[in-house]
Amino acid sequence: MKILVTRPLEDAEETARLLAARGHEALVAPLLATHFHDGPPLSLDGIQAVLATSANGVRALARRTEERQVPLFAVGPQTAQAAAEAGFAHVRNADGNAERLGQAAQEWADADRGPLLHVHGGPGPSALAAGLRQCGFTVKEEILYAVTPRSLPPDAIRALKEAALDAALFFSPRSAEVFREAALKDGLPTQTLTAICISAATSAALAPLIFAQTRVASAPNQAALLACLG
Image (cartoon, rainbow, N blue to C red; front, top):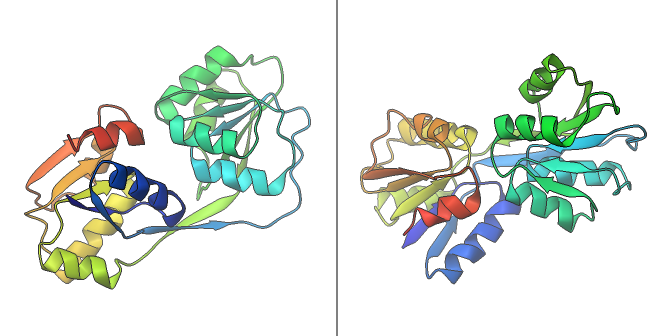
């Protein structure tokens, strides 16, 4: 199968390798770009644990501190892997979404043992942090990066027009929205594509585009997403 991979470049390359190992051909077309914010070193003194809801949050944090001993609570396996690769010594994996991470944080942390820190990409306040505050936790926030939309590259547009793709992978509602807007604006056909989505919210963000099939991963992680390929 020839498969469109829409996630940011730093993660899409890994996905492409996994697809190749399964005998598929990837066409990498990042629809989101990550921009890390520069700034002074972050102090993690007194922080009970870091909450990371994306691999980019981990990467952004690692750029701004040399501290690697503070516990890090990761939303899922990709984020946990990024934390391990960055050298964080105490990583726990909630293996789910932000809601599941919030539940896990209540099990793993103690509201009386110091603040938690949620590192994320904004643009606004963190719903995860707000929910934990309602449960009695003190939660600080640091917006360490921004994600901006990118245009579909010419080779992806050509492949869509020629119906040369079998499937497209969508890893977030945001990337699905960017794809939807590009397809609607340029009249790109999607009826022969299988849309493979990491969540129901991601699938919903593709409406009103019509696909040959839409498959939703059984869990919000890359392994479950790739399992939809059969």
